[in-house]
Amino acid sequence: MPILVLDNYDSFTYNLVYMLRELGQEVDVFRNDKISLDEVEKYSHILLSPGPGIPSEAGIMPELIKRYAPTKHILGVCLGHQAIGEAFGGQLANLGEVHHGVAHTLHQTPAAADNRLFNDVPHDVRVGRYHSWTISPDAVPAELRITALDENGQVLALAHRDYDVLGVQFHPESVLTEHGKTMLANWISGNEVIG
Image 1 (spheres, rainbow, N blue to C red):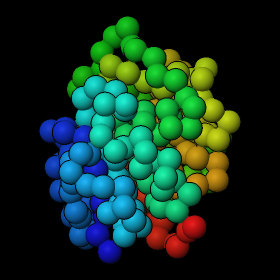
Image 2: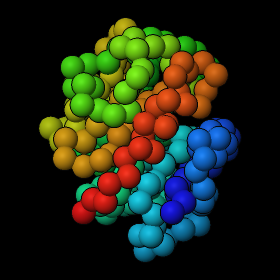
Image 3: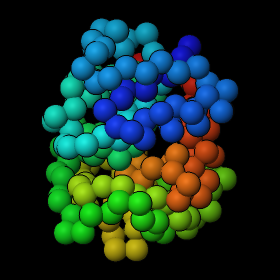
Image 4: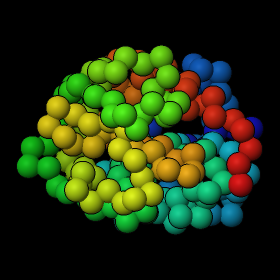
């Protein structure tokens, strides 16, 4: 079964697609307004790409998360991560400083211990960031666990407490991210049937 990559009209989308294909995956790519919610049903794994703007402007993405979170393996990257946060009641905050093409150190939290995304990844690792919005660490809903922070306490990764829904604010496909390919491989490894 191919992985669905929901393209949020972003130039980084095909870097993610390339990395997934390098990992031996078949990938179907649809823009966020070119696939229906019903057509998403056949996929077990859904990657929500980065993109410009805010989640509410990203086609079907917010509704896709709400509908399929209980039954699909979902990974949100950058805008996709922010959409996961908002879908479960989190709030976005505009950064005073835009992070575009910068590397920061990711620090795993204790909640990352049972998050397969970070299997075989050092506790502290450099990651590439390209964003001006973030999920407010003070407004993360109870359903979500913060699994990684940066050195300033900004949220870099989230995981749902009950569903296989993961989000990363950074770009695993970036050359600035150490172990990004390992993280994607770890996400793919979640292939049990859910729901």
